[in-house]
Image 1: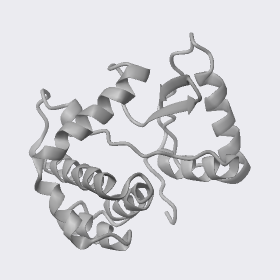
Image 2 (image 1 turned 60 degrees about the vertical axis):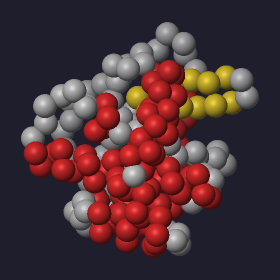
Image 3 (image 1 turned 135 degrees about the vertical axis):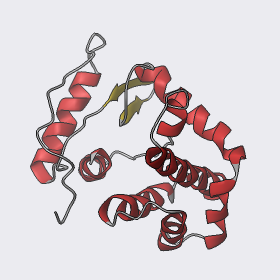
Length: 188
């Protein structure tokens, strides 16, 4: 949800987005998780490896397309599989051979470096999503916002401007309330 909101709002504010990897499988590697979640996390880890291979070959430009195509398959279609990752690579207009990076552990170092960069700005005691704002030498990060459905139009800008304002306050740490609904994807 946050990614869809960020694309909407950042586009209206003419702010570029740089997509970076953050692995829940790595974050929770010392935590016992059910087999089904471990399998899902493994496939998601493979998708992040593919993204890092794409970044190494093509730079940041195609990552947003790949992230969207992967998210559509995982979240809208409920297809969390290696085949879905391969289909996302192709749908993003990339060489299908890049999907083989899903099995290459060498990309894990890049994922860990991306995670270290994110947590350097928000701390380790947070979850995802993580947003890091860079404006010249000023860098500030925040975990969140978590919302559903993703706001659009004027609402997207209101949330964007509010988040940017909160991130600008050095002593701001958290805003939270209980969830009252599950994820509501476009078309639900």
